[in-house]
Length: 239
Image 1 (cartoon, rainbow, N blue to C red):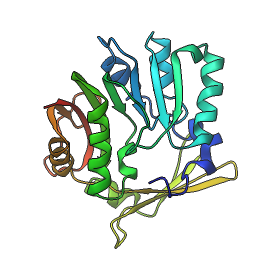
Image 2: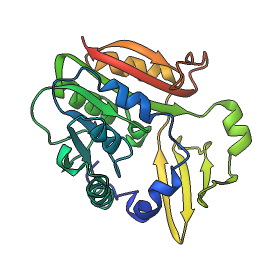
Image 3: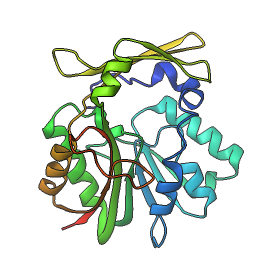
Image 4: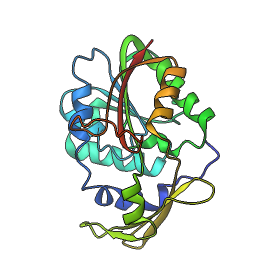
């Protein structure tokens, strides 16, 4: 993955405004840190939308991301929020985080695993997370696959967010790769995502050496959809 271009470099300055409407996962991930006796490792930490609330709640965080532009913003935001001393910011990949030690919590929020291109990369990332956990530790992550209703309503349609950002999803490409175009304040990028049905994600989690503890179809405890589409929230432990 390290050879891939940084898909977020073009929108780092507008990223927080673009995703401002997405708040429902923050309380979940802060709650996942409860009871930890080690720093929380957050992979694909971005600009700190989870790391900073964790730090403000009193947890030490190791925040890992591959995008220097995003981490520069995290650093500045953490300083402004008075949280800088609790956040250890590091450059790293999902498949090679560059973190040593054993930790009680590893978090991969905001559908970040969808950037992985194939099962080999997905397994490598899940195994890298496994290697960071204590025997009683927890991995928590969320992913997404579009529902038939999502595709019918949003395929190729520009969606205007309240922040002023525009985005358009191309879900049904022949190569199976989802393209999400984002535009705001003259900044643009195309995010390349690789959705999978819930069943396949759970198979990969177990193949990577985890026991699945809990699954939801959303952050309010909704059941996973029978067709495997929609949101999937997973909590797992080393088997």
